[in-house]
Length: 279
Length: 279
Image 1 (cartoon, each protein chain N blue to C red):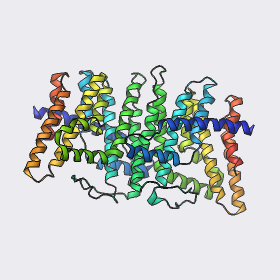
Image 2 (cartoon, one colour):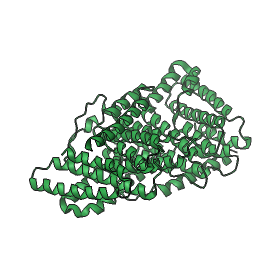
Image 3 (cartoon, chains in turn orange, purple):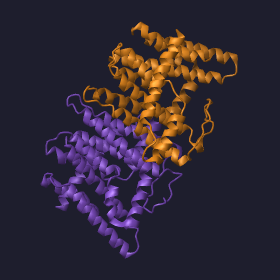
Image 4 (cartoon, each protein chain N blue to C red):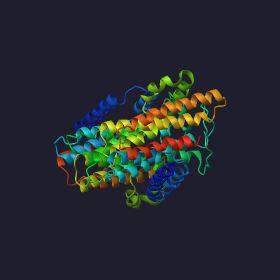
């Protein structure tokens, strides 16, 4: 089953990648689109975009409604992720952060000024990918506008509040343990929550479905964060505490998937199992 | 008449300012919204937002269609302008540019890291102001999506291509004179062209009206650029050449207004006269 699961996610990721190759090209003005192309494809892939497509499939119950839009929104989410990643790794500031976390080395092809300006261009470019989805034949403009608001909020908080948010998360876990899951849960959280909500919106999900999938995305992101921190912990007692917390989060995540089509819930929850299998 | 004209533009600007005060508040997270509030209101006011509202009024022929949305879009344009202005005046890089142009001194309350991150948040925040305009009672989602694409393109090219664009403009004028107006005209140009086009779209203008007003906005922006450069010229012959070029641009601008309701064209063209009267 895990094998099928992997195929499912790999196939979604291929479609997103193909869409990115189609829309992010090196064109005029080359001085803008060449560094943008580089930064978009140099950034490591994240699971939030795929979650957008999977959430759309989960709520649309097999019919293809909104799927094309979800792939395009997923591509936009990757552009946002790449922008945020590039901003964290500007040539001049690419140094260890206050919070210990593994920072992949990246190859800086362009100078800091170019990267700085390019990221400024990536945020509107990514949103344009979504705004252009409008199709007069299928009147889903209202859904697309809602997705734009979801993304603008997530990248606002990702870009700006990201640092504070991570720090808060890190401190809370360390000082107070798992009882603070609830207080963290209320924060708007990252690209996974956004991606899942966007997919559910584009797939025509109900308000309840959108909120359940948003929460699912939030827990997935928290589990990923927890696992990243855990790789940096040295003592076995803190590693144990951390794996206990992951288990709590995993159960909360799976609870959000109750009530959805069971045959599809399995692949959806596979996103968590895939994370855990890497540990 | 110039007096009435001034009152017209002042009244629009007051409405935009009131809208900005309403939507840009200091709220949670304060660490984000306090510097954002500062940067939004510290940036000098630009005429592009008012042009958006005036263009909407010009095409909607007196009925109030889209006006409320145009004021909100105008507020978003100011946020974009403030983001671009802040980026050009980051504490560490706030020094004379290669192209001589007057750079207003600004008071830096926050450090470069905070300003850098805040601007990252301002771009999505501004777009959210537009995306949230959707009103199910009046089905204008398609117009709003189009306005979002207009703005994402303008800030992409403003933020990223702005430097190259200004340089190009400057070099062309200096080397070749006014015969290159056409080649410059074909570039997507700045916030004024965008503002005028957005206003025309929200007011329900025809494609022809949208393009005519976009061109008008472009000429207004070019005249403003020309006048800024001219204040820095020392020789009387270059000042004379520059005022000749402004006259060419002014005629091109007024030509774009032909065919619109004449009683309203006068206030619209007042935007140029106001620029000229300051020289």
